[in-house]
Image 1 (cartoon, each protein chain N blue to C red):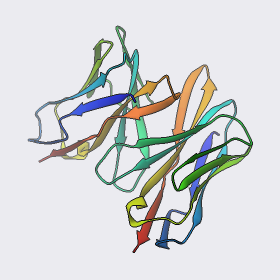
Image 2 (cartoon, rainbow over the protein chains, first blue to last red):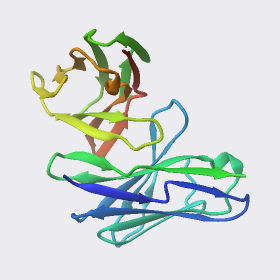
Image 3 (cartoon, chains in turn red, yellow):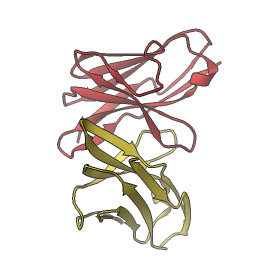
Image 4 (cartoon, rainbow over the protein chains, first blue to last red):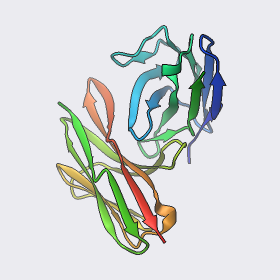
Length: 115
Length: 111
C-alpha cells in the first residue's frame, strides 16, 4: 500500500530557531498533502493543505509566516516552523491522499519540543 | 455546523470482551467516512472507508458499519494488541473536500 515517510520523528530545538519537517510519498505521487497538529489526548487539527507547485492553503487561525509550507515536487512537502517558541511544541503529522482507497495515508509524525 | 462526535471517550475491556465504538456525525454532503487506528506517538493507520448507509467492512477482529447518522466500529474478542486510539473522520464536499476528525476513542484491552 501507499507509504508516507516523515522525518525527523523527534526534534528538540532552542527557542527562536527554525525547524524543518519533511514528508515524502513513497511509490506514489501526491499532488496534495496535508499537515496536522495534534495535542496530547486530542484529535488531529488540520493546519494547511499543501499543493504541489502552488501556495499552501492555511486553515483559519494558522499563521502563514510561522508555518512555512513548500511542496516543490510530487513526492515531497516540507513544513518549517520558524522562530519556534515553547508553545509550538506539539506532534506534527503529514498525510497524503491514497487514491486506491480514497483514504489518507499518514506519516509517522514528528514530536517537536522547543526549549 | 458540521460535526463529528466519538463515544465513548475511553473504553476498557477484558480480553475477549466484544464491544462497539460509535462515531456520530452531522454534516452535509458526505463523501466518505474513515476509521483509523493510532498508537501513541505515531501517525494514524488507515482501517476502513465507508461510502453509503448500509455498507459494512471487516478486517480481522474489526467490523465497521455505516448509517445515515453514525458509524460503529465493532471489535470482536479483542486482544491486548488492539489497544489504541481509534479515530473516525468524515470527508465532506464543500467547494473542495474537507475532512473532519472526531476526538477519538481510547481503547484499553486487558489480558
